[in-house]
Amino acid sequence: MRDLNLSQSIARGNDGNFKRIYKLTLEFEDCEDMEQKLGIRFQNLCKAFTDRFVPKLMDLALKDLRKAAE
Image (cartoon, rainbow, N blue to C red; front, side, top):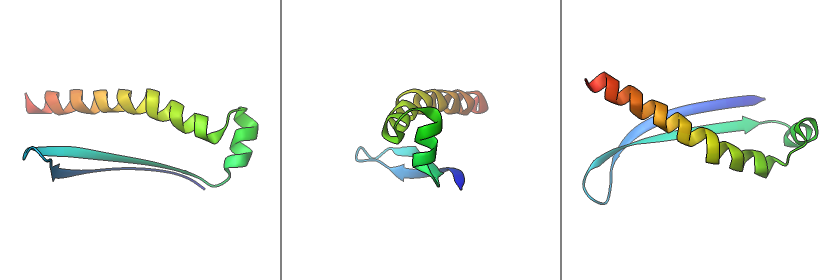
């Protein structure tokens, strides 16, 4: 089972402003098999994903939002 879920919501922050919140979930059935095939620990894969992919995804999402607001 490999699953990818992306959802968004809007919430009011402590400062009173509304913020868009994105939630990205990755699920893998057999992490040990994946670790063997990729030669990397699952924790390291998750860290690389959050350090590299998520910021780029957020940058693209914000660019799209700005473009839509024009």
